[in-house]
Image (cartoon, rainbow, N blue to C red):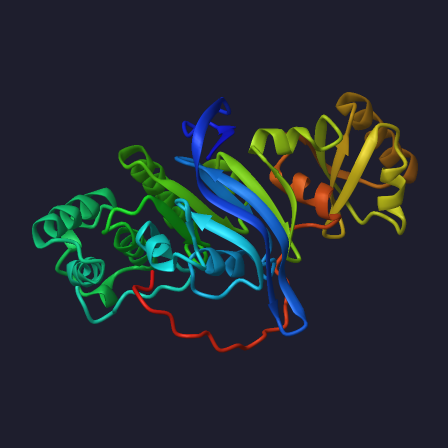
Length: 348
């Protein structure tokens, strides 16, 4: 099956390409709680596809169903053309999976961690060494190949995990929150590494994240997931273009009075006002110059000192607010325990 989807080069052009992932009306329930609620989407071969949403939105549960780790309540998922319920082993051999938690063995060396994983996937000895050498170079860990994993930094361990997930040359690569807990420098290093790997190998990548900048930088298309539902799906550019208001104004006032946010909302051409703390506001407007003038006039009339004002581009934060009515934030969700049945074959 083929689909018209954004080209894998990420420039927004369209191309007729085969499907790597197909998800149809997938549902996951834990008792009375619905973690994933009737989600459908397709991922083109060679695409970098992002699932964006807060913690607790259902992203990890969705990945765990697609990678055969938990059963699907209803609906269907096909990975590289294989039904994950009926052809689980075939689906597993087509994928590499990087979970959110770091799972490499701390007492083994970097090379030993990769070697064990390669053996589990029956990678021949000759090909195993070649693959490990190539991956260590790709993730810039060659000189640490004999170092115990416990001696690595968090960013280096994440790079090891990514290399380990690629050691058997999968066609499709799942990464669940790959940069959570990393410092800004390490996050950027992981992004650059993923882009480099994508350019060197023919991979389809599905990544979950709650970082707007990560999704914007890496993904050809983004699916926004909230409370287990798919609320929007398109390219980053198209999603940002879909938000009413062609300009975004960030403005900070000194001790604004009660009802000030409502006053800002009443200005002509303003489509949205997001309060970021007590003094900072992010305003979407269809007429930036006019709204800027009116903001200054309103502040002068009310005797409210203006601390800063700048016009910025629409971001994925604005997109999330537009489609969900609130800002992207971590949420507490009730944990539901369950027993996963044992399944034959390799675990990803």
